[in-house]
Image 1 (cartoon, rainbow, N blue to C red):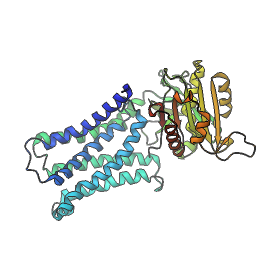
Image 2 (image 1 turned 45 degrees about the horizontal axis):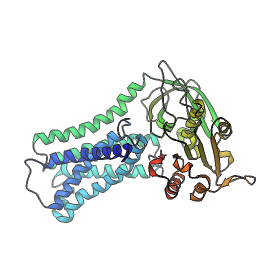
Image 3 (image 1 turned 45 degrees about the vertical axis):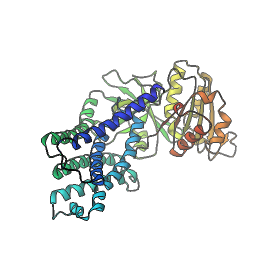
Length: 439
């Protein structure tokens, strides 16, 4: 078993222990008589719900050591899918006893026990809103910034209300030792929220940046260049990303993740991000004035080319090329002559970001570039269609299939490329994919 696999299994075991250990403590010791398997199972689900949503605050706190060796970006995707599981737990926790005995419908009746009913209803509504607003945010017209604050507030509300519900029901938390453990779980989650939303921005104030340059790129994209102000700046590895805040203060709802597009050899004194105009914030980047203050949180991510990789294949789509362009620029500056292949999908030639520079990089690196256009011009002579198995088989020989693979771009391209690579015999551990569709 590889060291990465061992680390992955260890991390997952630690996650399970973090969930199960407090549940065992809650349900151990001097407890009331058991009420049957399904009733006790519903209690177990309730505790699991409370603990897992509390751990979510840790997973989304962007702590570099949390989730190794997956990387913070993968952990955020894990958080997204766990949210769906939490909704299932929320439904199952009260539904099981209600199906077993109709008397438990009284839990929803404020006339029987007002506080118990209110807490259960509030937790249910908040949890449903958490999932609904995350999955259908754009359909509701909710901006990313307001989604972030509502998501944090609703999650904190679920933890606090869930803790109060367990305290009020009492069954397994009647003694003060267990009540202190219950308080510790809830307070830890709230403390993490305060740290991420208040303490961390306060620390960022001491490391400001300013916009040194703004330039338009092909494909309706914009590059923003930052320089540190009064501090050494930030070092990063090509392929990583950071959270960017533009404005006078880091205490703002506006904070977005962007991959570095500059060479890591230019850091820490010069840092570049390139983004396509796809939303309110990115469409305003081109109008940012030089000298505008900015703040960075990072670097994050494990989407990097390791020194022991014999070569690399980059399968990119649209502005998803930004981490690849950072790696290519860095390899050029380090005079690294490892063999490289870039398969780059776009709709037409106007959408090909960095097209001229990619041609120049082929002169400086051992790089082959394959452009794939889904809606090509009449005079286009290159690859057409989409990145699929047939295309990959044409361009990946036996040698290339042993290299490291990096995939970034629109979700359909990434899904298709990952599936095709596995079908043609590329090992899963060779493939790294980066997704930023967190909501």
